[in-house]
Image (cartoon, rainbow, N blue to C red; front, top):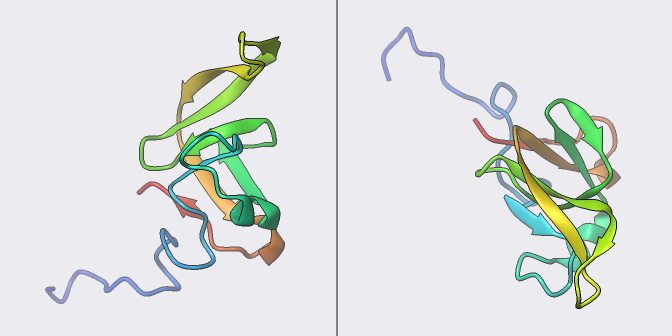
Length: 106
């Protein structure tokens, strides 16, 4: 590093990994390989395009998309129909309070 580039410290850089940051990809559907019941019990907050959302079925931070249910429509197996929406995604654990580390794409 040269003298003009500031060094990133935990206080100045956003959290992107660690035990208190949600994974990059998570789903609420138990049949999905990205389902993790332990993490979901902790409560995961999602901010999509700057708005806190509670209707997210699945998200990917690195690929910048969320999957949401389309009304009350279900497929022939009884699973909700979903659509994938692209945009910036941020995730955090709600059990850590107001100052929880946020996982986001840089």
